Length: 122
Image (cartoon, rainbow, N blue to C red):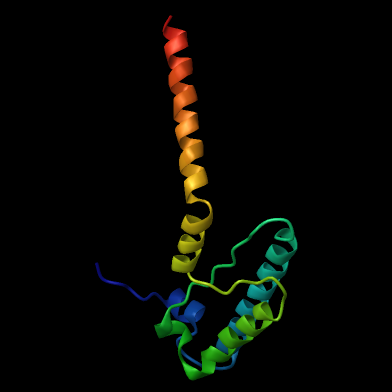
């Protein structure tokens, strides 16, 4: 499948620098990410939250764009209790700390469902 670049994509991804509109768009995205993080950080006081930063090097890896990524990472990491991680690290943590509990819980649920099903047949 081919990828078709549409005019709105050019503007969204900031592929061209013209009259400063693209840089304003990037600054706007930075404000959006800061606002998103602030909300998630507040809501995550009692439970874990995830701020996903989907990165596409062909969009974010240019020198005039990378400063916005650096700024959001600096901002996020300046807060306490933030875990900068990868999906693999999250999976490893889950498997190491919760997997067996969830497997046992699911087995108990299946067992109780089976018992209810058998008693309903009688």
